[in-house]
Length: 412
Ligand SMILES: Nc1nc2c(c(=O)[nH]1)N[C@H]1C(S)=C(S)[C@@H](COP(=O)(O)O)O[C@H]1N2
Ligand SMILES: [Mo]
Image (tube, rainbow, N blue to C red; front, side):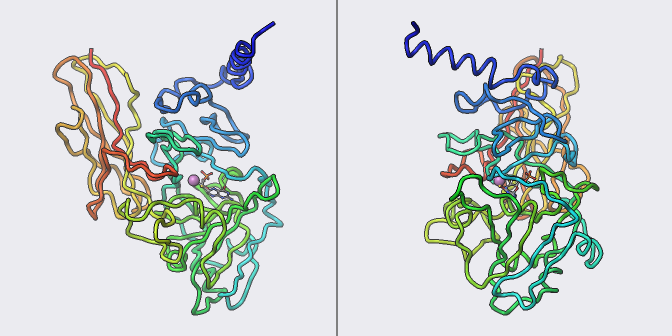
């Protein structure tokens, strides 16, 4: 008879080899896509870092299946706009209905609205000015898996983000049509997804009225020229350029303008950062407490996208370092690259500008003079002087990781 310990061990191996990792699925996808996946994840996480395709999506790095949480392999970030079928997927709740665009309705109501209204998708497309904005959709917890000490939550690597052209209507135009009362304080948004277990708090978020009235804040029904994929919020989602994606409610069904701070779980308890730890310009004052505040703006950040850790080059070869840089909308001023582990820095060339909320590509070329290991780093700075950190700004929920990205390559 097997001892309890042996039993545990054998069932663990069985699940790793056979159940958790469906071999047929692994065989179909290019394992090289995992080449840039984060290696410093907590013990046990890496074995489960497998590629799997949701319906309509390319194989993405699976974090959890229920609710679906899948990150984009870094290779896709070599393109300015992230393909819809490779765009990351993040959900808090498992009951995600397939919304029928013909019967879908968006309601606008709340105690601070003059004329509550109901809009169809056709109304959005025909009764308001159509606008488009290029913007980074970035999960607050992107790179959480790199936090030391580790924190609970989805152990994201580098890929809980994407850049897209979002087309739709200004939230401001909808709110003006409905009419705001003078006491309007926050705009509360809800989507069609719900929790499976009774008592799971619905995923509802609020933004301050001034941010809702920003001309870049839109209700989008198109992404990169196509209808939103189901997994990214079909038929319409909120897009809040410059702010982390927690506010970008998918499958949006209701907008309420209220005169009191909204106190649901996902505002009051989750998605908060300690006060005064991060250089935040746009604050959400009606939700601030004496100790913490809702996460708002995206921190300045960058990523090397074309190199893999341990990649080998021949002496004499010209090496291209390529990547992306972004922030909360203050405009990337420069990206500096180091090839000697941070001793010296050189400015990279910036790619085409697609607007302040899009990420910006950058390029740097160098020819190593001798054989050895080269530690490549990239550091972005924006036009208000914010830059990336070398020391992690640790926080309990694992948000805003913007530590300088480092990759070691070999020249032989
Ligand atoms: N309806 C709904 N919208 C949502 C969420 C959700 O759980 N439900 N998660 C938010 C969070 S935290 C993130 S990071 C983004 C992810 O957008 P994506 O799945 O299109 O990549 O959706 C946001 N909108
Ligand atoms: Mo998120």
